[in-house]
Length: 289
Image (cartoon, rainbow, N blue to C red; front, side, top):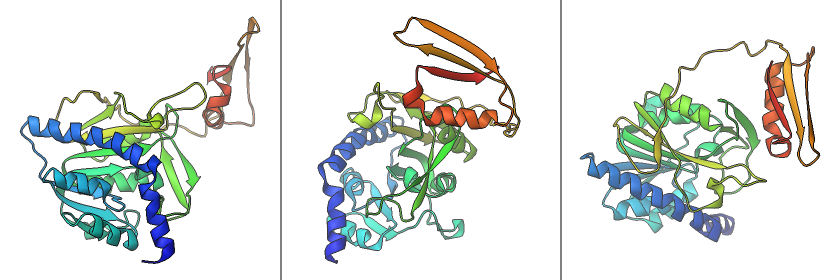
C-alpha cells in the first residue's frame, strides 16, 4: 500500500467518521433485533460501500455471514486485514451489470453511500436485486418536499465517490424509487439519531435520513411506514401564474401580490425557492395561484 493510500484510509478512522458510524450502528442493531423478534433472523448480509470494514466487522460479531462490497481495490485489501471474519470484493455499483450481480442475501446495508453515486436510482434497483428480506439505507438528502435531486461535485479522497459527479435525491424521491423497485414496505426513521446531521437547526436543514425497505411488514420503534402515492407525470414545462407572499419579520407589516412571469416556468421558480430555502424562509413563500 502506498503512502498516499494509507493516508486516505486514515480518513475513515477520523473522529468525525467514527462518531457518525457509532450513531448509525445503534440503528442497525435496532433493525437486526427487530427482524429476529418476528422470526425472520438475518443470517447473511451485504455491506454496500463497506470501506475498510467498520460495519462488516460489527455484523460479523453478530454471527452474520457478511460480504463487503467496495469500489476501491486498496480499500478492499485494508478491509480484509481489519476484518478477516468477513469476505470482501471490489464492486462498482455505478458500473456493474445486473447480469453480473452475486446472489441475493437476507439483508443489505447501505450507509453513507447513495449520495456519492452518479446514478442512485439504478443503485437502489441493484440493492433490491441483492436483497431477500430488507435493506437499510442511510444517506444525505436534498432538502425539498418534492421528488427531485441535485447534481453535485464529489470530493477527491478514498471516502468519497469513484467519479467526479454525484446526484443527491430528496427524501420523497428516495421513497418513490424504493416503491418502484418493488419493496413491499417502506419506512423512514423519525426517531433520535445521536448526530448533528440528522437534525434541522434555524440556519441549516437536516442533511441525512434513514430508510428501511422490506418485504416483511414490521414495527420498529422510530420507524414510520410511508404511504407512497402513485407517481404521476406532470407537465413540467407549462408556464403559469405564481402567487408570492412576502412577510417581513419584525417590521410589522406584510404584503401579497399576484403576477404573471411570462418568460419563466413555475417549476424553475419552485427550484429557485428550494435552492435558497435557508436564506428565504420564512420571508418568501411561493405557491401556484
